[in-house]
Image 1 (cartoon, rainbow over the protein chains, first blue to last red):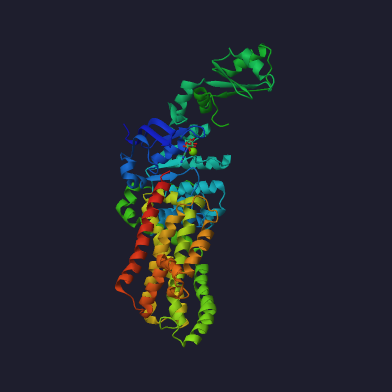
Image 2: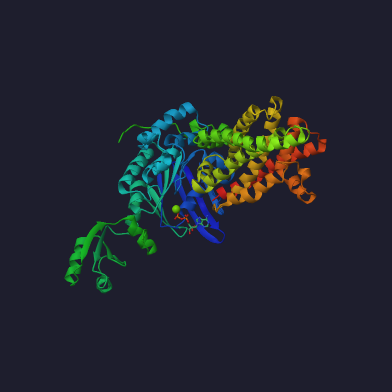
Length: 308
Length: 280
Ligand SMILES: Nc1ncnc2c1ncn2[C@@H]1O[C@H](COP(=O)(O)OP(=O)(O)O)[C@@H](O)[C@H]1O
Ligand SMILES: [Mg+2]
């Protein structure tokens, strides 16, 4: 069995009386890409800060690289790479200086860093911005720089809190590609996200979080298999007719979810159900058959949508 | 896209944790100095420009007036500029140290949040505090030296007093830098906080601390301001060290003790506030 890089048992964080993380258990193995998927406020960042040994837990046990962060904070942090939810770059400094200075924090030599900075600039596709003031970078570039910075000490675990939030689709794909490469290098990744496609793309295994609790755990495929059907039929009847139609087709498929703007029917065969609906005399304005996703898993588990 | 694979040995191989922890404060100072270096030209121009203007206006203008009335031995038996120099140096060093402990702290906690980035490495709140202080003292040292060069050029101080004056100015810088660091680390949003500190704390302190005239010439009820003011302790110390103003040994010890305890106390308090604020 691969060794546990992170092990949390009953991990809890309270802010005053408010319970942000409510006794969660999980384990992350070496070389794994582990995800925390959940909506805003689920407690993902709070969990991340505890894992990054910068926030004291209120209760429970936590071991990172076999050590307790309450006792060995600095030793643990020396082996982590942290990408926080909002960038905290040195904005007055040049792009390369951000990498260099961060490497200096770890006591890395100037000679080592000279080479490393070039490597990381290439990795983050920021070679042309090498001498630019960091403040002038676009959001996507800043994000890549933050990730590159987290890699300067060659961390054993890379913690990424919403790595692609606020980025355009192209920038996201570039980032995903970079993260895949890190995984190939054997770096253990922990990623929080509220994007189900990101979780599906990047994570070997994930926990679905809501209101500080774990709702489900497994690989994306396992979760979909367990909590959803193979296909989903999405139909829209227009706002006035949605409710009426919903009542009449509620028996179709395995399960029906009525959302404000559309109806989702979970089934093994979407086309077949669509024909049945039309036969019943309801002609949808639009219809779409797609594969189940983690979004559907979340809806099933919580009755709410992941991103609203 | 390129397909270069990164060289990768792993943190366990490349990070020497004992060394990194020991030198942590210095690495923080490196970050601060690199930020400062972006303003180096301004820092040097102000560092030289300020004293030059000040000496022309106050030192030579007011000084010649004072000296003309008192035959060149205006106060404490020395010329007005010699009397003024320790206060000017302490004031400049204090200003420099406070500049480098106030705005960088807002930058670190609020504007850029880079203290949080430091804290995500093995660096601890205390190493950040010490690092910021080291950098602020380096800046204060630079400012003090530039000021002393000007004072030498104006023949306001002697070569022999350069080192003693440097020491007293740096003691003042450390005391105020640490106090400002502790204060600034409490600021959660910058509502002109520093302008208030400048106008209602620093300015009166300079006026009533024996900067421009001996504290003994104040009415007796205003003199306590001078006694509690660290500026007076620094200035008086500078006068003792530079032109041998007679002093009781116990008062000499109080001057140094006062400034050192402000430095140590401020640093300790800052360390606690930092720790609390960085544990998020
Ligand atoms: N420092 C804090 N003080 C008080 N409440 C907090 C603090 N940090 C987070 N919270 C609360 O804890 C809950 C979880 O927050 P967070 O971990 O940031 O969620 P997520 O990252 O999943 O969006 C939220 O309700 C948030 O308001
Ligand atoms: Mg978050």
